[in-house]
Every structure is written in structure tokens, then in C-alpha cells.
Image (tube, rainbow, N blue to C red; front, top):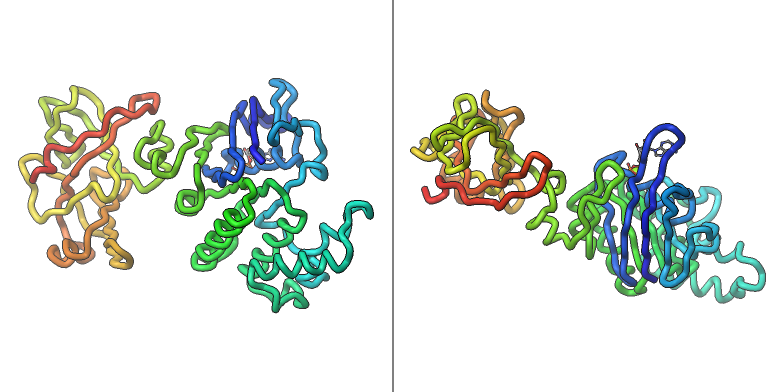
Length: 367
Ligand code: ADP
Ligand code: MG
């Protein structure tokens, strides 16, 4: 079932706008992530789609599921499944009864027979591999298992739309990873349409067909993970989708100066702010005529495919992060306290109002 929002806005009393008028289209069978910092309006948008919250009447926004206008349809009649971080299971009910609950409270005409309910619940528990736990109570399950029960419960009524609000937020990293895979599998297998809220960029990028990046009640950009990363619509998206180092200073006579840091450049004269991803920073033992950016290693983390190195210097407003190949890390013999030089390979620039300017390789990259 496709979802189409047009001009959906929300004020909470006089507290100001939680949502600017939002337009959003989610195709049938698509999994879309809503990604943004806390307070950016993700939950509000999801609750409005669910029918748990009313959008403002001015502008008169509409919500369509397929061809059906559900703007004024009660939450009960929208046929939506929910999974919320704090949408707790019924503690006094077994796993089986939790999953069966939605079916058992259907009006008699719509309610399947008890045999059919049993079969359906067991099929769902099999999907989330919890059939052996059917008679347990929520307190006897781990957090990850409880969220799998929540997922099964949400799917019991065969919703065409599944809404998830930070469903894995309370779980540790490894379990989250596993549940992401569950969700993606169930989504593909059962073919529903999903909207998934998270403030975790990695989770959004890994799981979603497309991601809507939100800030201040607005959708800044909606795109595939690849397009968001490589062609951000503005500075906010660029900064939100990964670690960023800043180099801000004055350009004069082809040199950008920022305290003790100097970078040769062909940029126009005046104030400039350059942004660099951690993999766009090379580390060297000596400065070059092109780049003189002295820094001290404050932390080294050699865990994973790359080595993460944190740098500090007087001229930095915030510490820089560089990622190195293990071979370079060993060649430099990096240790905390070591003094070296950062060398930009390339950098990104945005206009004062945040629009991207063509990224450019740094002149020093040739070194
Ligand atoms: P997110 O889920 O992205 O963290 P929310 O949708 O919860 O953001 O909140 C968006 C904005 O609306 C925030 O400024 C928040 O304080 C405000 N807000 C959310 N719910 C309410 C409410 N019930 N009453 C008043 N303000 C609210
Ligand atoms: Mg929220």
C-alpha cells in the first residue's frame, strides 16, 4: 500500500511548529527511513500517519493510503501495524497471547476461528524464531526477543503498512544489527510498506530503500542512501550523515590561514569553511609546501577495517577524526601524544545558506 502525504503540518498549542507542511510519497512495498536529530518531528509525523495525532487543519493536509483518503479515518480502521520502543508487551500475557491479542479482540464477524488464530500466531512466531517461547512471559525474554514478539504482534493483523518508531533504540549494538536483518527480511517476504524512525544514521542507511532526512520539522532531502551520501542537498544533510572535520579561516594570496594552520588554495579571498570527511584526511610526519596543519594524536582506535585517529590542535574548534588503512597506521607507528601533520586530500564547501558547491580535490593531494 503506497502512502502519500501532502501539506501535513502540526502545531502543539502555542509551543510552535513541530512539523512544517510536509510532502512525502512512499511507494508500495518500499522501506523508508525517517532520520533526524531528536526533536526534528519524526515521531510526530509517524503518529499522524498512524492516526494517533491529528494534523493541523490549516493548511488542510491529506493522507492517502493507495487511493483511499484516510485523513479522517480512525486509527483502528487504518490497518496499520506499529512497533514502538516503549510500546511494551502485556506483561501478564504469554508470548502467544500477546501476538494473538489483536485478533482475539476483533468483532466476531471479522475474527478468525480459534484454530485459525492459533495457526497464524505460530506461523508468525516461526518467522521470528520464537515458537519455542510461546508459553513464556515477556519478563522471561531478552530485550531483543521482546522486540521480535512486538514485531510478530504488529504483523498479526496483516497490516499493509508497518510503522516503527526507534524500535531497536533500547537494545545493544549487536542485537540491533540482528533485528535490522529480521525486519528487512520480513519486509521483503511479506511485502508490506514500512516507515521506520531512527536517529541512527548507520541504521537508516543500511536498512532503508530511501531515507528522509529531517530537521526542524522539515524533510531536508529524501533519497537513496547512496545519493544522500554522495550528493547531499545541503550542509545539514552532509554533516548529519557522517563525521565531519572543519577548517575555517581567511583566504589571502592563495593561502587559507587558521591560527597555526595554513593551506594553499585557489579559493577566492575571504572567509572560508572547508569540510572534510575522516577518510579525506591523510597524515604525514612532515609538513608540505601545500599544507601545514600541525596536530597531536589524542586517541587511536585500531578496531575494524580502518584505524580511527583523533587529532587535536589549537587551531581546531573541535577535534578532527582521520581514518587510515592499517598499513599506513603501522608505517607511521601512531601513538597517543605523537605530533604530525594533517593533509587534506579533498574537501567540501557550502554556500552561506547551506547549498553545496562542487567538491574539489585539494592541491596537496598530489603529495
Ligand atoms: P522526534 O521524534 O524527531 O524526536 P518529535 O516529533 O517527538 O521529534 O517532536 C517534534 C517537536 O514537537 C519537538 O520540539 C517536541 O518538543 C514537540 N512535541 C512533540 N510532542 C509534543 C506534545 N505532545 N506537546 C508539545 N510539544 C510536543
Ligand atoms: Mg521520536
